[in-house]
Image 1 (spheres, rainbow, N blue to C red):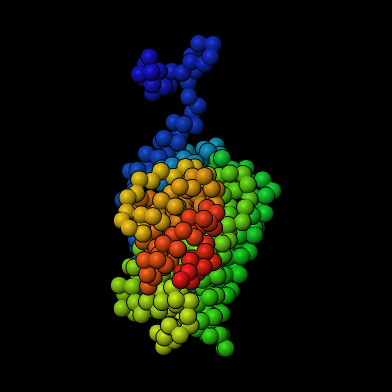
Image 2: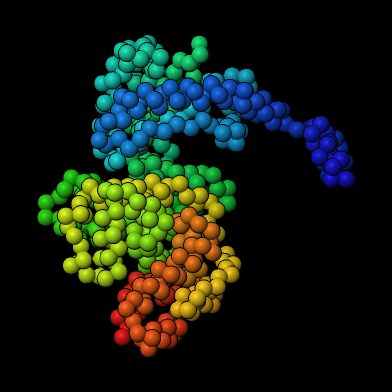
Length: 450
């Protein structure tokens, strides 16, 4: 019966509740035709995009403010969604909708800070200086790539924030291909992708929910503050000691995480709660013991800094810091790289509010600590939320990440202790409320048990 129904759907023969024959709306045929055009031209779209990114990289890649140039081709699902959402099928033939779409190719010129966006836009106007007609301009030495520079920039988005978004086209294989160029700072790029994943593509959320809108605005304001503070550090603000820079960067990273995950908690549970202490605890792990910093420590210019940060966090003693190895540029680079890493996370899949299933067997003190955490991991909301955040940021499976965390936690609270001191520490740990287990203050208190 199910197979027969599927065959009728495929043949556009659908019956309603009264048994009357119905057919699919013509818009679905339109969308499928448009998606077929995308499939058939995907190779040329990709090569055209590569042509643009290669030129922009050669023209602007050596500028200090530039992080990189990336491109993407709109996916089938994204194309279908846009056609329906904007009623594009009403005015353009299906065969033309893809070639005519201004952002079928998306190119992003990514930079460090908000102020760099305006700087790079001015640089683009300098390079794309030859009038190509119809509001388009091209470089004198690269007439195949054109940008429409006769419109005011930046432009306002529906969310009220500004963006540098420029239409362009590129000649490839005797055809012209449209593309959209965006100039985005790291924070703006991070913010827009988070907003897109959490709200724009999440049909479960009500975009007009006043609490959600307030949270999103607050998040954007705080990320803007992070951009400003990081900018000050890069400019080598006078009197800003290295230790203070470390604390500033830790605070900024924790703030960024807190803002994003507060929105996720609200989206998944319907309840806005404070998770500041938990994001701070995650940050301590991220910059000293995570798989990410382990990768960074393999780079010669970053290894001394990572090791010094780790010693400072674990010992809580400024004397452990070698200020010759910790400079503002390295700290800024660490923060930028961590932000870039976090931007790749699929925030839609974070299951805050759901049970965590773990089967972990360790040895000695590690196993004792693991049992204390696992006992309440699904009974305490905050402990459960901490590990959902932690698992989403680390790159292994949940079991591997939990094991790494327990080893890190145990090594910190048991370092240098006698057997008797270890027993006292475990006894105190087992008495703590579950929501206090991962907090920085708890770890420091346990470290000091003698």
